[in-house]
Image 1 (cartoon, one colour):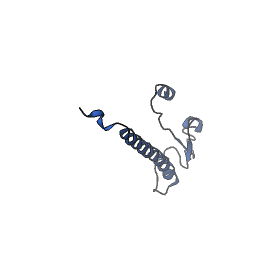
Image 2 (cartoon, rainbow, N blue to C red):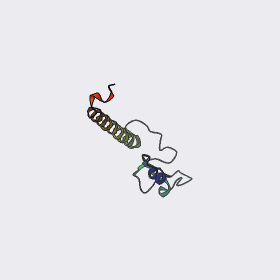
Image 3 (spheres, rainbow, N blue to C red):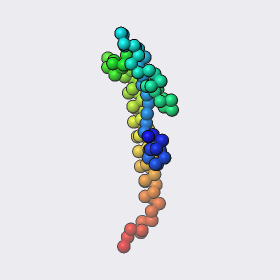
Image 4 (spheres, rainbow, N blue to C red):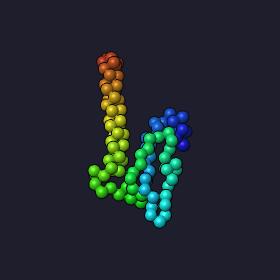
Length: 103
């Protein structure tokens, strides 16, 4: 699916994988690490079991910082891309002769 998306000329989907580092007492491993990550993409462990890995105690929680940090990286990439597009559009407008649209 991801390869087909790129072959069709669409922008790639940003992916980053998080996995649980602690087994569930009495059950064991819920999702094996090799099933929780995609080898072509970045990944990071969250020091919690599968059920608690998104239950952050505060903004200082290491898991929260890891997830929010990745999201902010993507936000910054989008903002940079938007700024580049604005600059390109501005340059394109400057290169259009003033009389081209005058009747």
